[in-house]
Amino acid sequence: MHFRRLSVLAAATLIAACGSDEPAPTPEATPEAVVEATPEPTPEPTPEPTPEAAPATIEHSDALKATLAKMPEADAGKTNPKLGDAAAIATGKDEWDSTCFPCHGKTGQGDGPASRAMKITPADLSNPEFMATLTDAQLFWVMKNGVEGTAMQAFGAALSDNQVWTILAYVRTLSASEAAPEGAEGAAPAGEPAGG
Ligand code: HEC
Image 1: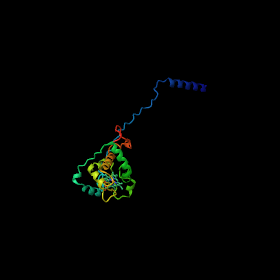
Image 2: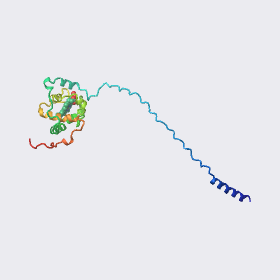
Image 3: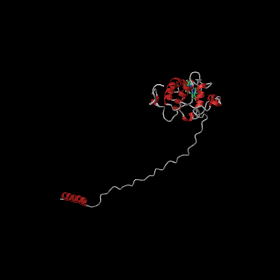
Image 4: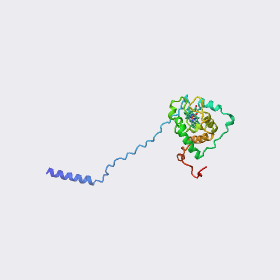
């Protein structure tokens, strides 16, 4: 019987196959090609072409230069007695927010709403580099006398020396690395004796 023989053979073959200790073909472990990430050659930093107009924030305007040139030698040594005084800074902030803000901007960047119409806009008083170019005596002089030919008026008649120093104490905080003390707003400094 051919049929029967065939199936027996087939069975035998199956058994043989199963019993064979031929190792199952393990998939060849293809070693991952280790591709070193070749760093892009960094191009030589091309020096920025220095623009014609240097950042106006560091440069003094001609008007400001002219104003500072008029400062008497005798005034050059003036220093701010209110510098770092928390109470003065708080008062100065109030004054700034009401009087100076329209032109100089909330943070002193020279971007107050009124500055848009100006030909000569206020400098960036929040920039430490710019503020480093002005001594306290010079700031005082500018405040007292204004900057001729610009919207910066003379506050000499409207504000006492004390008031000017007080506002300038706040102005100096605008360029301090830490933001202007928020707590200073209207708050009496702790430990200050009441009445005085
Ligand atoms: C009506 C607009 C106006 C008001 C208000 C004003 N300023 Fe100015 N201020 C200017 C302008 C414009 C300049 C720029 C003058 C320049 O650089 O030529 C200036 C200049 C200055 C400068 C010299 C640095 C700079 O930007 O050139 C200081 C400091 C200053 N102002 C402080 C104050 C303070 C403090 C007050 C508030 C008591 C005040 N200003 C109010 C418009 C104003």
